[in-house]
Amino acid sequence: MKRLFATAAFLCMVLFLSACAKSEYKALPINEEVDICVICNMQVKDDAYAVQLTTKEGKNFKFDDLGCMNEWKQKNSVDSIGAQFVRDYNTKDWIKFEEASYVFHPSFKTPMAYGIYSFKSKGDAEAFIDSQKKGKLMTAADLSTHTWERSSNTMHMDMDGAHKMQDSSTKKPEAGNADKGMHGK
Image (cartoon, rainbow, N blue to C red; front, side, top):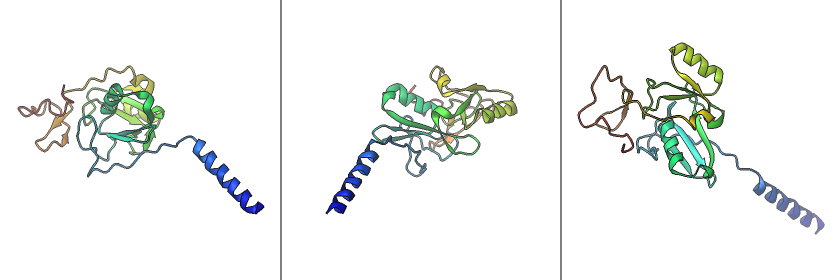
């Protein structure tokens, strides 16, 4: 009887301690067949631009561009966010938003033309800037004061709604499609 009581007490203690443990948030895989950006309703590609956040309640939101995640945060309570994840531009590995380094330039092509790439280290971001001969190094804190303007020269929508990046000097936007997918702005 004592052994049964000791085992039950031990199990109760383990359950209690596990319930008190801080939740560990993890990035979820991207499923291109079903994942849609909750802001612009575009397909979320399994690429370097995909980002996501998980609320403290465990609800996951996926975005095709870092700018879309920023727009979600402007419209919703940031206090409800449990974790945010971005992809390393070079490896596509998931990184915690707060730990990544960012490079911005309006000519950088991203799905919704926000022009921001994320990197797992400051050194990788600086090497990218050096190789491109352009770009501004930023931290997650810097992004909170970023202007979040989109470049109309680095995004184009084809007739199927798929993302296509282009330089406006090489091709004019199709009539009537210049502003599609631009979050209604």
